Structure formats: C-alpha cells, structure tokens
Image (cartoon, rainbow, N blue to C red; front, side):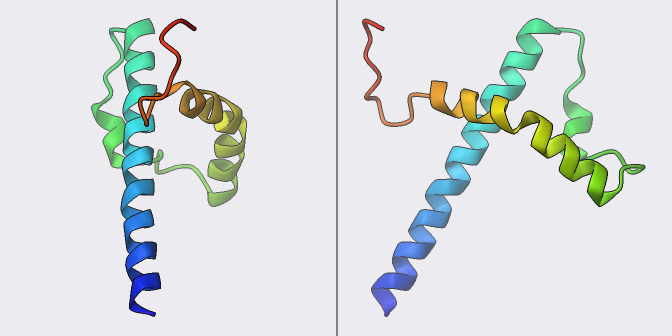
Length: 83
C-alpha cells in the first residue's frame, strides 16, 4: 500500500513539473510574438469578473493549443534531432 501511495506522489510531482514546463513554454511563445505584453498579471490567475462557466469555456477553447504545445516539448530527450 505504501508503494502505491509513493508512486502516486511521484506521479503528482512529475505531472506538476510537466504543467510548469508547458506553461513556461506557452508564455515564452506569447512573449516571443508580443514582446510588449506584460506577463506578470498572469501570475494572479483569471480575471476577477469571469464566472466559472466563462473560465471553463476559455479552457476548452485553448485545450487543443495546449495539447499541441505539450506534444512539441522534448521532455524525455527522445525527439529525433533530424526531424
């Protein structure tokens, strides 16, 4: 049982790292296209005037882009350098 708990905690730690890496990559892409954009406000979360439903809609709209960015990351060093 302890091994299962440990495996779950390790997976959560790994998944958190992937999320941070993906978010960083996404913000770097945004900054590269729009250098004048100030990214600091993003640190505070979503705009205060958005409802949970509006946030869900926004999440769904960017889901495919997020998946594409994750697919582009070379997290395990196994990407083909010739590709």
